[in-house]
Length: 195
Image (cartoon, helix red, strand yellow):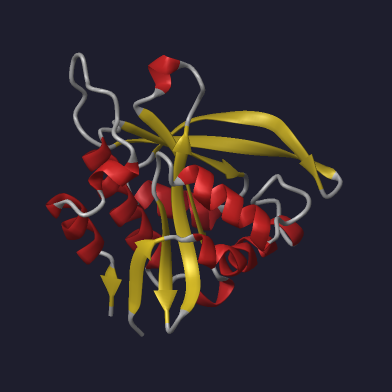
């Protein structure tokens, strides 16, 4: 089945909320305790797309998964780093969508001028760890008992991935809007078609 990867829009808010909700209500994957509704997801998409990419994988008009990047930390020296996440609808697990979404996301982040990506994973989660490590993320540490949900304390592991070689005096990363429509952007997005 063909899947197209494209930039998210606020119109995707309801479907993105539906993809994300089971990670909140039925698992400790997310440390949120109430799943955000469509309006909140629309707000998050709008806020994210000011600077960072938020991608969706669409199959037959349905959002089957999404990947996004966001600010890693507030301080200015962190501006070249991002935190990434990917969520896939349960019916599309192990279909290659997570790998494809992250591939396009990484290409866009390089075009924007980012150098490092970080991902947090509530442990245990062998599927997420496997995906991240297969894409070049390496473990950097574990925050022990970082969150309490569903009557238990949970550890969060952290992974990092280089996006491009480090350089001295890098220019500030460009907003995602600055690269939309460029040849590099079009090339990256064409790489996000799964047959």
